[in-house]
Length: 178
Image (tube, rainbow, N blue to C red):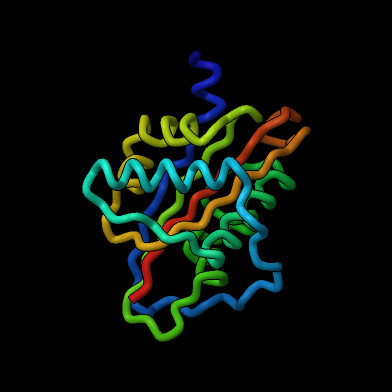
């Protein structure tokens, strides 16, 4: 159990609230996120059910946040690392703003949950892992979020941190713009 827990340890998260002080780093040319996978759909449904249980509103699926999440999941899988920071060392909010820009907003805030696990992880398992981490639980139950983007990437032989194992990497990006 301790070994599995070590494999699924999720990175500490940061919630960033910005009031139009971060300049976008330039939009990426990445294609928009594809249709949601079954795991992504399940995580969205489970997150919204959890939020309802706690008196919070549902999150709308955001293709912009999903594109940010997908790019990050693929980058981590390809380069063999697991972090909220991008491979170039920039913080997750700098990455997300390229996809989920500040344009015309007075308030912008994002949060992120990550996990990697065995390839058979399901939505309830992902939610359970996050709920057992105080930092990730806090993100899931943050009332100000209005949107979510999800990415679940399955890799048959992930390098680096993943030790060549078959893994599923899930990125959930949360946001609000007003």
